[in-house]
Length: 131
Image (cartoon, rainbow, N blue to C red; front, side, top):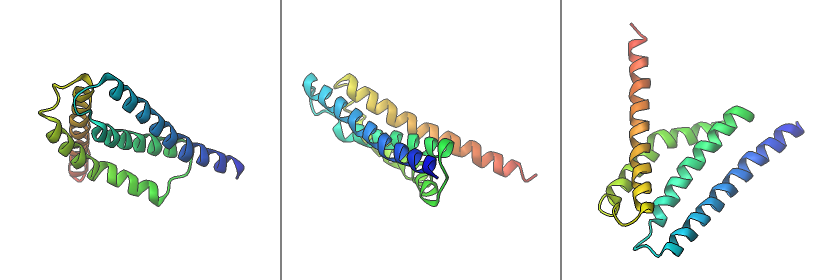
């Protein structure tokens, strides 16, 4: 019982604090670099999405699965790729501004493409498994 409480608190308190702290460090670094229109919003969205995946994996590995975890995975698979695709579309003309812009653009495209491919593979395996 106490183990579950400690693990739950560590996962659901430490990971969000780690994500927010990492984003603040990156934001500070972007501000210090004095780049034109730093992609704060894009990186915030990416940190939220990747931090949510970290929460999902840690929950699955060390804690108990729940309906909220299932809703999180649902959002990460069906909603987050749309958001990252929109982010990549928005950043397509800004990717030459700085390395921060390039990496945010690449991460958004990569996430969208990876989820799309994984959903296709999963769908295909479900369709062909019936035969």
